[in-house]
Length: 89
Image 1: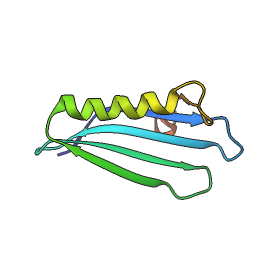
Image 2: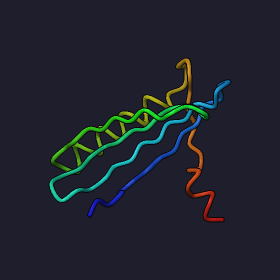
Image 3: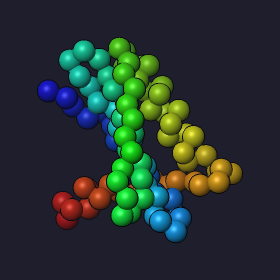
Image 4: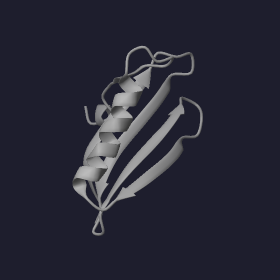
């Protein structure tokens, strides 16, 4: 049974409310880093990268997160609560 180990939801201040979600999932065979991105009103784009070891998967996860939140880039994302988490309240 897959288990989500860590997940981050990002949003950018943009006209179409761009968003980006990354998560690290543990499988029986290894780990997957999955990213979904898009904007409100549009279908999400999904990509995934498989790694055998936790450290290697975490390195991919951290690299993506750092790149998306780096100041000085054209579209800077900031971490926000996931829409799924907000539905709990």
